Image 1 (spheres, rainbow, N blue to C red):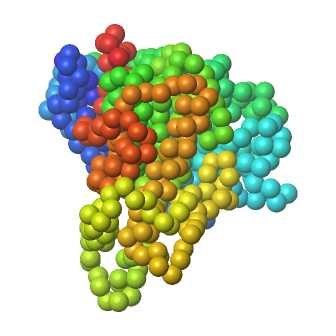
Image 2: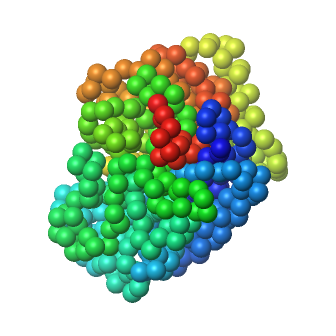
Image 3: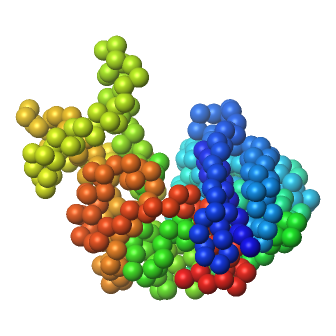
Length: 444
């Protein structure tokens, strides 16, 4: 028998089929998620939920034709974003994604939604969080008239596959919306009411990998957050492993059964009565892309087009390593180019520039060291506060998988045994693993 896992990412949709007994991947497939909609403002980041649904269902059908013995379906996808559904469980809005910027836009009194929420109830939230988006819609009178519930895109797929009229949301997705108490496993409805939001818009919450219903003969598991799914799909030894992921963003995840949070660290619900401590720099792997774009723009101004600038950048790093492998860049680069969740106005910097050290090689190394430092700082907060010190560091995501120099930097900085994750489509595999747990399979 087989388990299917599907990951509704921001730019791609991926599916895997795994063997129920072994957990091994039988097949994986990825398609483009080119469903973005044009909003009226540059800061609007919207996608079409019906087109996402169409693509996801088509991908599921492809897998079913090849593996008709699929017994369960697991779902994950981009966190934080929301859409609204009507009383029949059909979408009545676009998907307001995690990248949507309305939470930072000034409202009638000149303050942003995030600023107003902090003042009204003390909640520390960020633009892109689902309930920040919802607050903005309420305050500006843009709530769809037929909206009865809000949910994530993963919840919506589960609803449409099973024919459910109301979403059932896993706590891992609930926590990503804001106004959520991970320790209590519930939304802070009193804080919502202080901000003028009616809690009846919220879906039901479960901390278990629960059944949403059936799709054909297959049980459909509650959708889980993509961070939690990636951890499930990558890590075998939960207590002994730090998971570092570098993609468009970056994050560090550490498993614990105790609750803890601090500035820059979230305690995200995982399995029942367990958490992932997560530190997530906003720019992450995009920092390196920003530098590549800088070199690309200069090259094109010289008439050099279609050059592989990432390969050229790697060549600089190889030459630097040959000269002095352990030497740090004299340039000190802070890679908070998109700010932080706590300080959205913060920006990156390049320090200690001299007439001798401002070279492409030093700049490239400085960027990678800055990316590594952002992750390590967050790990040290967790380690110092909890005493948790896993044995291994497991790295995943294309941003680190394709960059051997970054792998070495992370290994040196953390001082732990470094393992590069070999699997592909980790989040989809993790969703399948959650569905397997629903079928009473061992998860760890």
